[in-house]
Length: 228
Image (cartoon, rainbow, N blue to C red; front, side, top):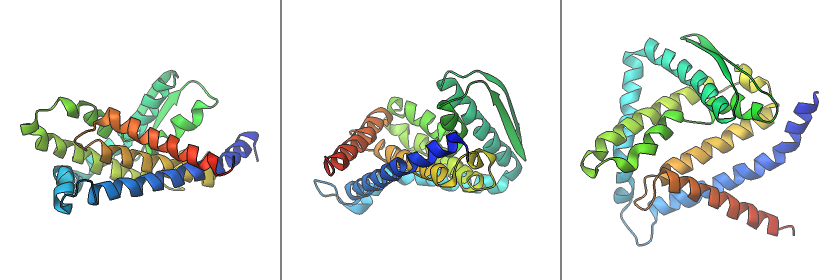
């Protein structure tokens, strides 16, 4: 077992705590949606996600009708996410190749950024975040159309996660399974929580990120106080 893998195993308990905190936050968000204060009807709370759900359905139909093109786009987004996170980590991207049966990205750099870059496609819905970034600028009358587009990206990334996440992936096999899947699961819940909160009338994608991070910090503080 390599030194790197030993270090990853040592991080498993920390990731387990973060995953539990994400579950705790998810429960709180679901309660806020279904049992808000002041009380509203369940239908009224779910209505804010209606057109996004329609967009998810539209992507499901598009994937059936345009399977080969959508398959290529899913591979391309996988490699693009590697490249985008590499740039965020100040790594140089040398090449990017995507085919409908696989792809490859060549980047420079190593060390602690390796895990962020390698597991990024299973953790970061880049197209959804891109469109949510501009959502606050959309006029209310056209917001339902825009939310359908957001929903298409949600459906797209959900399909990417379903088809690409597994033991068949070389990216995941580079790390101990417990570490890789806890890492992916924690980020998956983080993204779901952030996206759900970004639709609230008092929130957008920026304040939703702050909300989610603040909740994690509060949970970590409470967990720390249990022992000290």
